[in-house]
Image (cartoon, rainbow, N blue to C red):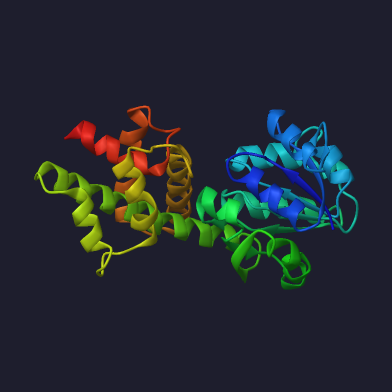
Length: 288
């Protein structure tokens, strides 16, 4: 299939590589040129704008940091919407506000095109391995047409509802992950302060009811002092903000999410925002 890919960051670059490996024809654009050149070397066509990407594609994938970025890339000057042909499908795999996602979908439909919101979970490793979990919102028939593409990127792919539903499910995922990260870091901080071997504590907890993918993937990095991002702490914080905004619109109290948001804010204030989410443990060390 002719696919356009916009946003070649920590997640987007390995995802685009997997599409090339699956045999798809790819046109790519990114604000910085280095990842574009890397994709061109693999056979992709480098483009000078989001508009150009859309003009060459039957499906356009965006993988961007936040709601304003997606709005600008899709609806702004030289954006995706200016290059769309009738029948093209936009698949936004960013994590953004469900409200914004729905608004963009309505604009896309005015051009006789379709949109899916399809955010992902699994971090950089899942992006590299092609084992992401993908939660998809939009029309069921559009989802089914896009499924062969999504299968090149993920292992668990679920159509969860209409426009915005994918983003809503992703925010639920982020709430669960963030609170889990906080609880892991607090347990490790308590263990360290008590003078007990953290590695042995993790070994025991990982065999019991407290075991989780968060612990198995992030605790070893903490023990090794590896704070490089598989998923940036500041993006996790952004996702918590979006979850709290959604909860506010629903008049739903999310007490633990609010607390996690403040804990991540402490980490941001310690200049850890560009580190991985496991760097939250550093914030506990600095506080203790």
